[in-house]
Length: 94
Image (cartoon, rainbow, N blue to C red; front, side, top):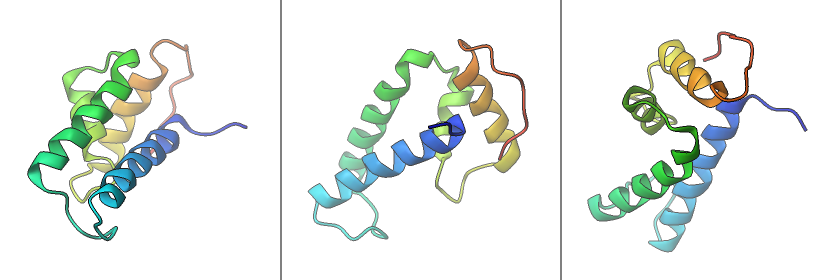
């Protein structure tokens, strides 16, 4: 099945976040504790390690699915980071 890499990354982040919220017995709209948030972000960062994201792209990935997400600018950073090793054509995604 084909998909947009950015959408797959957003889905991965949501699945991992859901795991931590279920583990802590939290509702999906509840916030994680600072310790659990750090654990979640560490695991998410490790999942992204094979792509060797730049610090800017990693920060953009951390903003995914949050109110801090910077729309097309973050989308472009992440698209480039995800396709760096695959020679994708450059497209503009949000």
